[in-house]
Image (cartoon, rainbow, N blue to C red; front, side, top):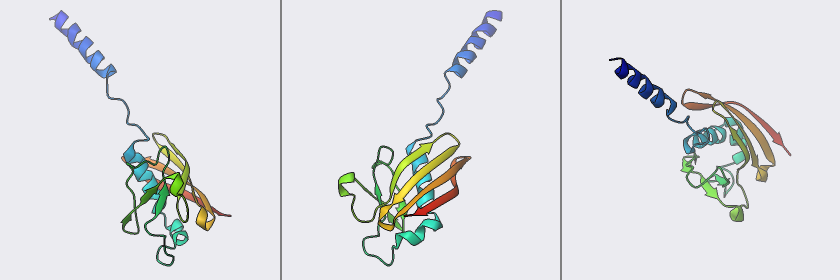
Length: 139
């Protein structure tokens, strides 16, 4: 009986040390939630001029190492168009820096056609990312 208890202890110890790896904070799902929160900010809407200016719908976002074709975003009731650097002309939003940890995210963005730069701070609450603050600068 004692040997059975020792074997059970060894197996439980091994199983707990081989537990699942923590989720990747830069997973596709996390990046989508974070960027969606940023582009949905009411503070940005006035810069998009989606209903007044041609070429502003659908929203165009510059692809990067973290903003890949696997990312799916929506704005103005349409799918966001992800563009490559060679197609980067006219109106497009870019995210030059995205820092994501397990609990916080900082996103820098630019919308050059409007001379807009900004930084958003987000926090993870449960399984969701929530926009905490957004700072905008016009140049």
